[in-house]
Length: 173
Image (cartoon, rainbow, N blue to C red; front, side, top):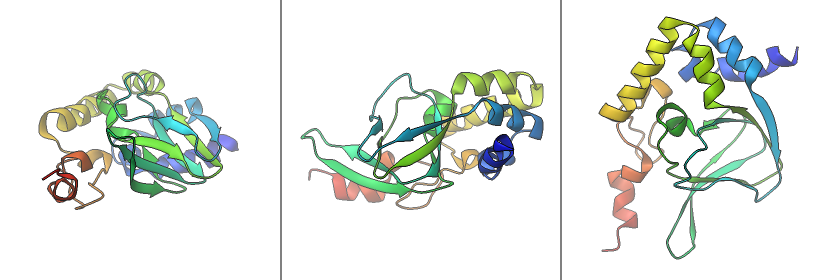
């Protein structure tokens, strides 16, 4: 019953429902874990390497933010129940482009990349789709398959760190 309820969170995400078989998604759901955070807990830092997990907000609020060299945090976005983060590192392995922290008592579902890879490799079509998504992101800067729009301009062809609108506001000149 718990797996069914948690599975609804994953199956509602277009990046899974539109790209992978129900069988693979069910395997992913069985492997995901729930973790809890208190207010101000850091989930990960910008430029972290090695944490390639995908996070889905089950309860609470998570803030994504930039860290400036002088130690100031610039808020980017607050995520609530049903929203997810970490998808670019999850699919490509690149370092994190933002930091993430809990701003309330929060519960997250975590999908470990290694468990996801194991599940998709059991279905050749799903593994091929995973490789296609990874290549689209890495080679073409196309984030449509993971439903990742720049939060500033709402386009699919770049991350917020490369957004021409944001660069106008963060440029030192």
